[in-house]
Length: 183
Image (cartoon, rainbow, N blue to C red; front, side, top):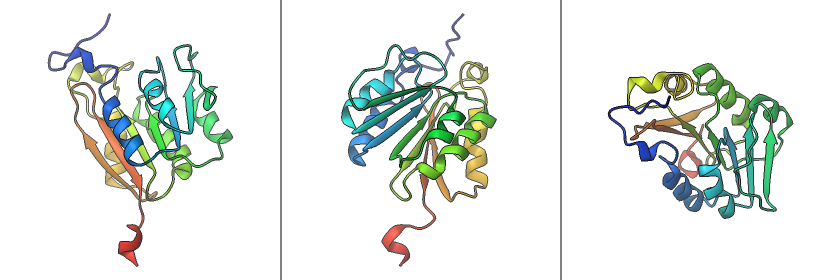
C-alpha cells in the first residue's frame, strides 16, 4: 500500500529535487558524484552523463542505472563502501536508510572525502510534507539527522534544510573557513 500524503503532489515523490541537483552539478562543475541509496536511479541517471565519475551505492541490485564507462556501481552497505573509498567527492547525495542514526553514520563515514569549501552533501527526506511520511520506508526520522547536524557538529558543516512538496532536502558544506575572506 502506497501512502500518498494529503498535502503533497505525488508527481514529486521520486524526482522532487532532481532539477536542483542538476543545477548544483552544473554550477559547481562537479567531477565526482556519489549517490548512496540509488534505488531506481531517477536522479543518478540524470547526473551521470554530466560528470567525469558517477558512483552508485546501494544494498539492492541497481538494474535501472545508466551504464556508461565512467559509472561505477557498488552493491553493498554504505558504511562498507566508506571503508573502501579513497577519492575526493565533489557532490555526495545521501538517500539510503532514512533513520536518523543511519543518516548520521553515513555523513560521519563519508564527510572526510567531500572536498572542503566547494564540496556538497545532500540529505534527502529531511523535511517531510506530512506526518504519514515519518514511517520507515519513507522519510522515517531523517529530519532528526539534519537537526543534529545543525545544532552541533564537529566537522564544521554548514547546513540549510529546504522544505519540499514531498520530503525536503538538506544541503551541507564543509566550511571551517570561508576561503579568501578569512585571510
